[in-house]
Image (cartoon, rainbow, N blue to C red; front, side, top):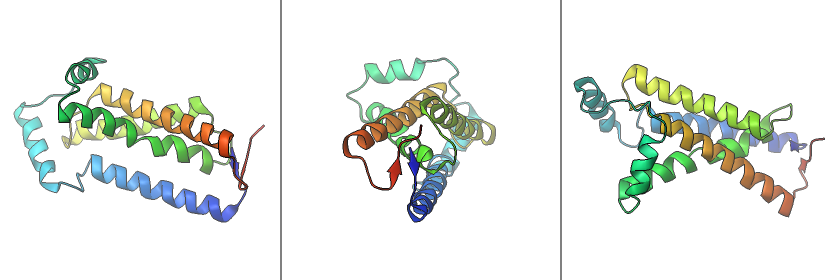
Length: 160
């Protein structure tokens, strides 16, 4: 899909940039709960919490505890927070950005966030977060494509 209206494309690009900044701020710098940043750093430094490099370990645990607020929140937040990435990125790129490229770029972005958390001890690296974040990117992309197919728009044109 291509945005033909330059003003709309600029606005969407600005929204995407603001979204990325907000997401980085909330996830890595804890904009919403700055005191948690220091608590997390101390918990990681003391060994109270540790990174997860085992695929599906956290997801399996959370799926078995879906009734708990944290499990529901973690799965939902890690997925939903990355949906705008999958929705907006294909609209603002100059060249076609299909599902695979969008998913790959979302995985790279999520990997940057998780790596920053690991390196700077500002959050817990979890390989399952990469999976859930990328699933959110893919879900956002698919929902957008379905929406465009159903509703269409005057400022969007299908790429050949």
